[in-house]
Image: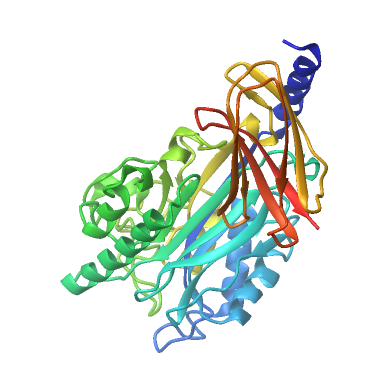
Length: 427
């Protein structure tokens, strides 16, 4: 191996050891947060009180990505949660996604994220039957991103499906997930993706759930990290993974009955399951916060509950009739770009930012065909160019047709594997 390239590879490994990271995901139904109704009133659903409970919970969980359902459909409440909860008394700085409500529902989803680790890109409605199912796209802020090193894309699909057990309720849920999954296939959206939210399901055999986990095209299927199919409703066999309800008796707003339903989920794509694209679900990390497995049909604060400190259990009880679910995504050592493929080491040079022409010089200690691709931040391939096997490649790509802004450069080997990724800034 060329000594210079070997040194580069060794240095890359050294830097990457420090770059490994975990991203903590939290999904939570906030129960008419900021939304006053005839039954969820200013007394049993007081926004100021709920802000205190939610601050306590978030300071304990410390999520990097926080996705929510049942947020009042106005930007005042969306921003107030960010300012008065997420960024108040916190050592972290959070941002939020764009507001999406194409259906005009009185309740919306939202994503909040740790700005120290993640960069927000876009929010897209996959379907709007009853309520929007929203696809949020972000990328990891690698420690070496400023030097145009590699990064990883993270996608979160958040939905709140129709509640109820009637046949029409089930048809609506079926329609919602079917449309969302078809959108993914039609637009070729796959990779590091979660599908999460309040699904209002009582059994894994329901068509709406099967649409997600057994979609005809296996490329777009999602998987339950717990791998616990069955009839979840009112079954003590699933007591440890139930997420609803925190109350044994209703207070008028929160549902009663005690913990007896698994309504809340974070499902993962095959790429996250296998770790195919720099990010992998961390085995054993999936948790229902506040569920100790011993409160089937009981309030979560009945007697003792040692799954969390007592102030957290009481905050969960008072905050919502759902429990949050969390899990960890682990970013592998390649996120900050070690330029190796099939035993070969690569050195990629270019001037950044660029004007109208991207000039690339690629040096390698081996030979294999390469494909150079330019992508937009929203995941659309804009250019591709194939290069025959050579130890030294020099090429020029015209960017005249593209507006000023940020783009992503991918280089793939002859097997289609990505061996290099960098941001490109065109001025």
